Length: 196
Image (tube, rainbow, N blue to C red; front, side, top):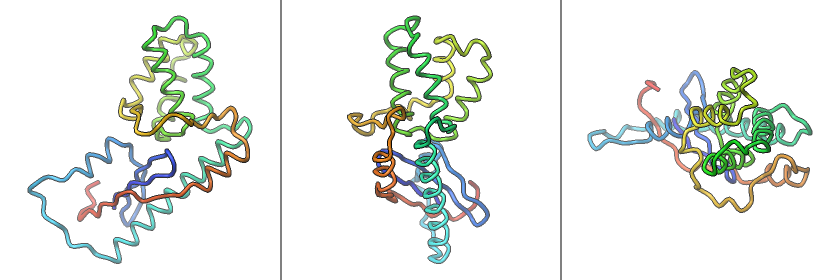
């Protein structure tokens, strides 16, 4: 079962079988959602359908609850906050970047503040940045890592950017609002095989 969830601006995809549940990035999920004209309809096992849907819902709930708690901690060590901190330091010394690179950096920062990038992508970016050593202070090196690790699809404007969540000014009211946002199942796909 592949399920597409939304909570405010946060979009996530989870794939479950009887053994495990994993989070997928947007591009991988889209490839699985794609249906070809020659595919036949599968007969849905209702019991299995709801069992797998519940597993995906639980994974999504746990994922979003963890992120809300982490983002609300003062000086928390979440991957989002750590990457934001690095990029804001780079942004202050971004006079070495051209206008397009500065806009790109700003867009990545906005997506991080909205927590709209997949957690796995954020962790991969941090790992690559840590591998730069002293070059982590060079804006051009950081931009190259961001462009290599972050799919352009994650930076597209699917939603209005009028109200980004700024982790520097998060307070208990914002955390409360994030926690109370409605979690929605947008789309689910029941798969007949466990090849994924």
